[in-house]
Amino acid sequence: MKILNFGSCNIDYVYSMDHIVRVGETLSTYKLETFEGGKGLNQSIAIARAGAKVYHAGCVGEDGKMLTDLLSKSGVDLTYLKTVEGKNGHAIIQVSSKGENSIFLYGGSNEMVTEDFVDSVLENFSEGDIILLQNEISSVPYIIDRAYEKKMCIVFNPSPFTDEIKKLDLNKLSYVLLNEVEASEFSGYDDPEASLSYFEENYPSLKVILTLGSKGCIYLDNGTRYRQYAFKTNAVDTTAAGDTFTGYFVAGVCGGIDTARNLKLASAAAAITVSRMGAAPSIPLMDEVLFTLGTLKSGESDAKSEMLKKQIVDYVEGNVKDASLSELASLLNYSVIYSGHLVKKLTGKPFSKLLQDARCDKASEYLIRSDMSVREIISAVGYENGSFFRAIFKERFGDTPLQYRQKKGKFI
Ligand code: RIB
Image 1 (cartoon, rainbow, N blue to C red):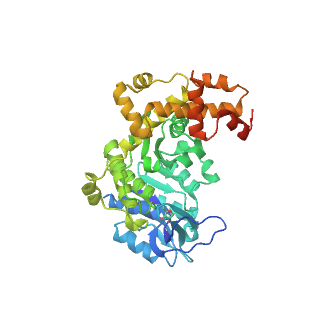
Image 2 (image 1 turned 120 degrees about the horizontal axis):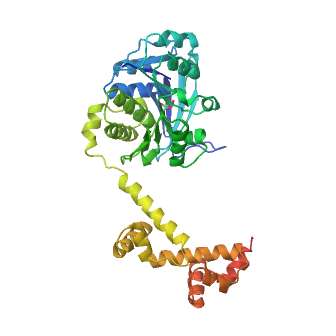
Image 3 (image 1 turned 180 degrees about the horizontal axis):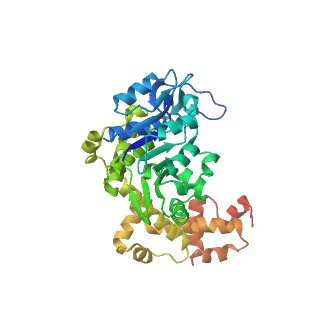
């Protein structure tokens, strides 16, 4: 089984700055660095650094020597990489002091992938070979159609997302690797689990890897959902983290690595990429991933705490009138004492204060949006003692309930 990656190669101009520039704003930058990048190139380098053989097909411009140098130094086979006349594709990347990025692209050589060139490359590959694609080159739908005819295993990363991508027949793909925004473009659902259900129902044989940024990823394969939490890392630059994950994942699929292990290695590799500046140069070798794996901390406990906190807050807000710690404890399946401890730890407030605040918030909503009298509201949020309620309400909002209603007006 061979791996062919038909993809882009970019020169990345990376500007470090305080924050991503806003509309109409002019901002000075701290420094400008130039790196090898492009989703295609990054993913080929990740595959090679994960230890698998990969053929990279695509077009570089006359100024793309730094890209071919790094690809060949990393062990990528360049038999199908063509140098074309004109400028190489490039990316302008802003990286904020928090490690967030914002990218815009100039296609250049990446848009010179013609159908004839695609045919000439694909004739060297056959049934069962893996073909990896992103959406930064021309002729992507054509490549998918031809690769499907040849019964190749098509792995598609629909990034950057375009309307053309939306029209593709996903039944032709074996794997799709996408983020929440891209998943919602296909499915119409913002919720990741709902998006996965959409793919499950409409494309039952498609394997889906849904990446969730710092929350990790979920992999859907034939009805089974595998969850991999992201590893914690000091984020310096997130560029190429997704590409590293994709490349490592594809190399693992080709090498027959067990799914859970493969997801773990791919996530660890992505975490290392995030901790360094630049795209391709920040992608680690498998040796480093294996060496670091034992020292990386999983974000699993953070994610679980977040879920637990949401459960607690949802319960209290949904039951302001009758909520009790003992009912919450049985819902969480913990003892009352431990639940009280958890509430304090996760919300920063004891249960009684959390409930008190939720009752005041609910009352403020009724004051603005209903015709109920203050007395009715007090009882609706679970209080019998009116003067106690008025005191805590004033403490929270700085006004008595009546003053609050007068100031905010009532919108029914
Ligand atoms: O995914 C990161 C890559 O996106 C960058 O290297 C940049 O070239 C853009 O293509």
